[in-house]
Image 1 (spheres, helix red, strand yellow):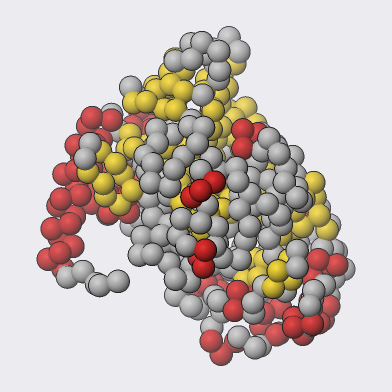
Image 2 (image 1 turned 90 degrees about the horizontal axis):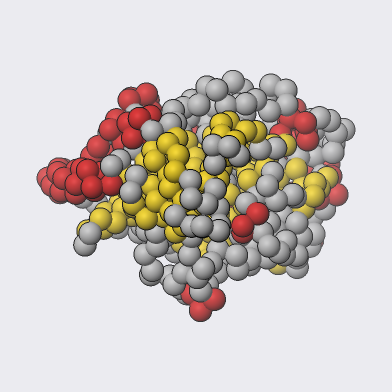
Length: 419
């Protein structure tokens, strides 16, 4: 992709700032976003993203099927053969379309809040729907320290399994997490030695947990996990680093390159280095379920008030709140005002209504190039002042998921013990 000159960037910033300010003025602090589809060449789409079946391979068969939709993302997808804007969300206003990343660059603290802007100079998190027919390889995401070695950032993440996207569990609704307590580094090293012999046996050293719609998990960096086949809402850090530690999944080969893609070049064959990347304390934690499993926690609302706002993703990693998320359910005919600690990305998973007067509607089927009314980004000041949600249906709840940046919600619950 051709690099931009300083003059080009200044012109772009001026143009985007004017367009973003106009969109914020009309939307009362709410930016409408276009669907953002991401394929994965090594996975099998689960067909629960509401994407039209004719568009599952819209990027081409060689790129793989579309099994992810990213929300309010300023993070590029780390895919081979990617298109230049893959993984990046677009703001749509009237006849204009511009990157959310450029809007954040232009608006700064107005978009994401002073604390986040001063520290990160960007919107440093994103979320996605992750939807596959079967399990994916046992893998981990590098820590900030490890990712920095290859010029990347680490990736903590959280999971929530929305019932609206899980009417069917597909082939394997179980996720392997970590390693069985007592597993040794020599055993994991042996799995890497056996990579080209077929199934390297890494799952023999792990244990699976049945996935339950309406619940979730907190997944710190360097913790192995082989996500199962529920459609998953994943608020996470704005990075796409990973290392696959399983050589064969459902008969499909996992190339060695996906194990070492975010490893220094001189360490690609260093098995001891690859083993040491793992957080051994957390991977072999005998209380893994207690310290990582998430049940929804009511934050506000009641049947009498006509809404329920629940924490669905929460917890700290070594004292740091990376990302949090809530699920808001507004009952038919109800209007409520919700105040939050900072900016957020929002996706509508059920029903129809309005947000600060703008339409919200969960579609039944989406073509690859369609614009929808189900996704928005709410800027910092609007979120803190209070956003008005209205359910215009007489029969169906309006349900939205929204995720927040780091350290925005000090009142969020904790999970299990300290990580």
